Image 1 (cartoon, rainbow, N blue to C red):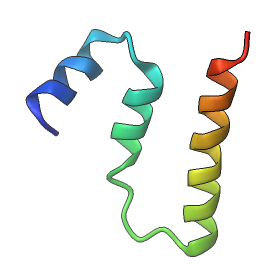
Image 2: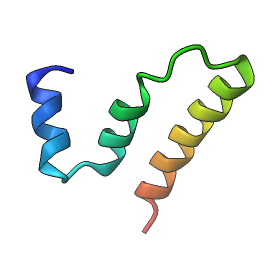
Image 3: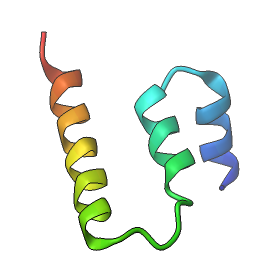
Length: 51
């Protein structure tokens, strides 16, 4: 993790970013798990944009 990423994670102001960074280290996901993981990220972003 870079110094900038570290600061963003430690600030606590970016929970979605933190979740992505922390989960990015998950190795060897199956194709189905990769799809579900990516879909969840997209849905999280959409949900965050809704009023």
